Length: 530
Image (tube, rainbow, N blue to C red; front, side, top):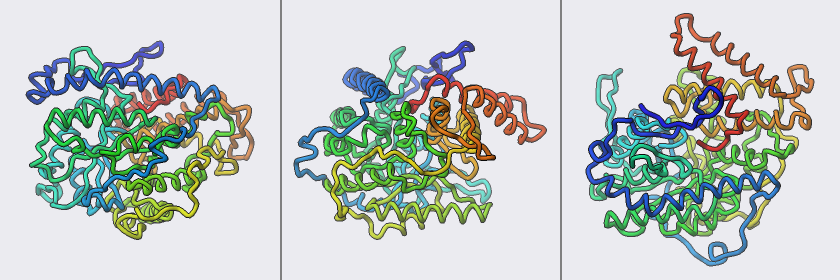
């Protein structure tokens, strides 16, 4: 596997790989016949705009760090006019959307057979951003859409296929900010353009068991919705489909977009079905945009309550906007994972799931995300009906405070810093081993939670003179860079000490590399979702 990389630091260690096709790939020979001719006009029409939008993101983050924080837009047709979408019959019930990496065929089949009304197949945060993982994921997605995907159950010595159902399949491509190399000679493609085009090129609507629906990730402005709109329409024209043939849902997982949700949905009104509060990425973005403010140094992640005001205010606003215009409102993922091998952890995880999903239902969400088949029944039961589209909150505050400072919430401890360091090392080790998501200490951790932990560590270093972090003796411990380096060293040694005596040397080397990469990403302020 070849990978073009950005070189950073004296040892040229790569922090942010750009997905590249293998060096021997012949796009005309090795990709589907006719695909490059299909892709080129899309690239010419859309890539320049994508690059402009990515540059605007950088400028907006820089302005925020100088005190010019995101805010609501002036009134417009999107907020003042009485517009509504027509939600298709096949999408009326999304009380649970199971999510997982598309490159794991067994998991894809199990999710589709779980009974969940929705399944999101992920090419983004939970899939390693390498050519082999992405192309395997796309192959699995095509098989799932046609109802043809299967896996070999070696324990039972049988082939397991997809059961016929009305499950809604949505596909999360890589975000607009990521790039694909090696397909069009030396040119950089938007990764999302490549993913969507390669899938759309290979489908025949007459052979699909499920409508073609994408889940738009990582957007940061209403303007970006128009890029996706233009992509969907250009593909539809090229394929001879109706202009609105491609449908979509979209994640609200950046702080700026939270202020522009209504405008974003309006710009995609011919395609959009739902907005989703991607709360872990949202928390990372919230920290990132407020990184220079000591009042925003967050407590240990697992001491932050699910109904903390900066979540709850947005959790109330999103369904109000969605239901005003006929869209579904989907809640987030519960990170604590059930375990069939650990009854105590299993009971705790399912109890947390019930509380979390009940809160989202009470906030008038129409559904939420889960990541394990055992969570489906409990999640669905928390929602009183297939959807709550007719419900609106009693208070129609159209501009609630989306930055209430989290004063007096949770605990800020050295133990929490250690847990964060331990998680980012092990998560990065998983990435180096080809895994975009890893089950760690009972929590399913992916890029979003990795970003949260790295940003939390950065906060504690940056504001070490203004915010107290307490050790086990309740004494304040300044988080100097040297102190955090010491924690990284200690946690690496603890991880290596827990490995079996006969562990291969390359495993130790990979954990060591993961430790180096994780700390360097913090030191060099590498916090964007890449």
